Image (tube, rainbow, N blue to C red; front, side, top):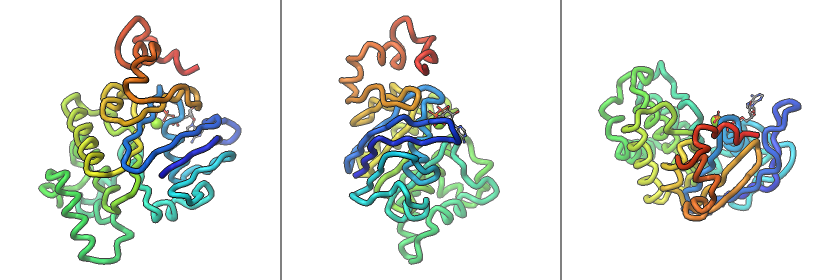
Length: 246
Ligand SMILES: Nc1ncnc2c1ncn2[C@@H]1O[C@H](COP(=O)(O)OP(=O)(O)OP(=O)(O)O)[C@@H](O)[C@H]1O
Ligand SMILES: [Mg+2]
């Protein structure tokens, strides 16, 4: 469904992605793991057209998308839940979902989607008229995911959905992501919460300094001593995970 080959993305003269190749098959939940600054967000921004790669290609269902505008990429069926949620705090929950469904012209279809999405997140229909900025962190994350689901995307890109949430809410968000995946949504998930992410993912890529360092299933990655030690909370390197950046 999604295929990135040899992608290099720059910020000015700084190269953030060094020839990244990865794939997501329809129905899969794939995660990208990596420390701060590894380039995880850049991968998602490059897929959804916010930043254009200098080299390499990205295909989505056989359509080359690496020179397309973000709007065209959304219309092809890719929705992005950015880092730090980025909901519209001044608008109500309902208005945020309305914004998420901006491409839906048919009112009945909008209502159908609204109901489907709020079925996943019942709290959002209870809070429909509440200003989104006054929601709790976990509720804001649910709203950000719900907003992206309004377009019934073929591929959902999630950037660190568990960031800044309490352990209980982290559990809840991962269980929602798992449910979404089981209901057939294809997901590319970026996470630092490796243990949780790998447990629900079909496949994982480990990114370090803009390069894919390792890839595999949970079992395969678990076999890698470095992953276990640095990301799964075992061994002597746990407190030195940041060293993995270089
Ligand atoms: N707008 C920008 N201008 C210049 N450099 C940038 C910009 N955005 C990101 N970078 C740099 O690109 C590299 C990759 O950043 P990116 O945000 O993709 O990392 P990340 O893996 O998502 O990190 P985090 O876990 O902290 O979110 C970093 O070195 C970062 O400083
Ligand atoms: Mg990031």
